[in-house]
Length: 356
Image (cartoon, rainbow, N blue to C red; front, side, top):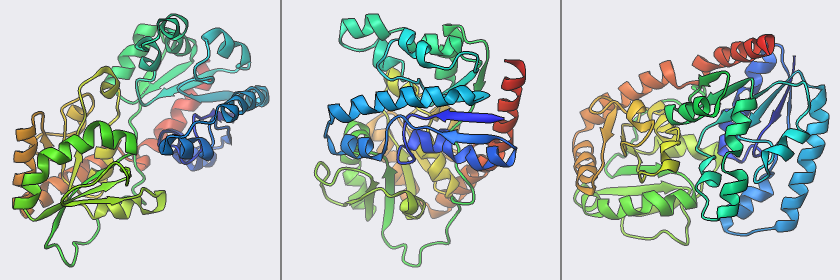
């Protein structure tokens, strides 16, 4: 079976790397002929994270997607990440998609809110129901959490499957204890945008606890320009180093504001931390309440005081950190690993093609 993946990003984009590309070896082993066709390239993401814009390059991305869709006519099945043409009406997207080729569309965040909650009334009018139309036209929608799943059913999707974002256990493992654990580390991993929106305020609330507990805050992927403070260490994100960086944490955190966009998040940071045997603390938003079993593999914290209490408790109790870390690792092996999901994805695709 020929499968064409119309991904949003190149491998540098986390959503594409995790939601589609990491399944390619398993799909090929199952007999699929796989072609990957990203909309945005590495240069786009590099510009995005540095705050630069290149309108002329963006025009080229749309032209390239048209070419990709012509080539995709030879496929037996399409796997689309979110939508084929960002910021384009459904009528145009429908026109360029190859006729007669069924598609699976995947969502790991509430991308529909970029349109239906846009401040510009014209955008809301033209695109507010665009993602609903994409969902309704799909042979199957794969959704990373209950919030996205509910939207797909409400949009009229004929088939919806819940598929979490997973980690590869061959990459993510529990590292041996550090030889010098004198100074503990509260860790976070993300992008400059998510640092500014949620992690930086949480770090500010935790500064007194870090000082009293002789701990540092290690932020992977935060902006070196925007981030500074006592007991704060910033490191750039690199794909090849991210596992080792997380393994250097003693506690992993995922703070989130409560809004429609964050309710669509799939909790990937938590899964990364737990896969490395790290106890977690998270805001009780969206899928976080499913991933974190409060008091078992970590804590849920809403207020600044709850955050300080949870961090204080874990910093002071190494046995609790170890016990919660082991529980989190076991949960990932069973429910959130590539090894647990690869065969399911292959069978899902075969099922979709046979019934489309």
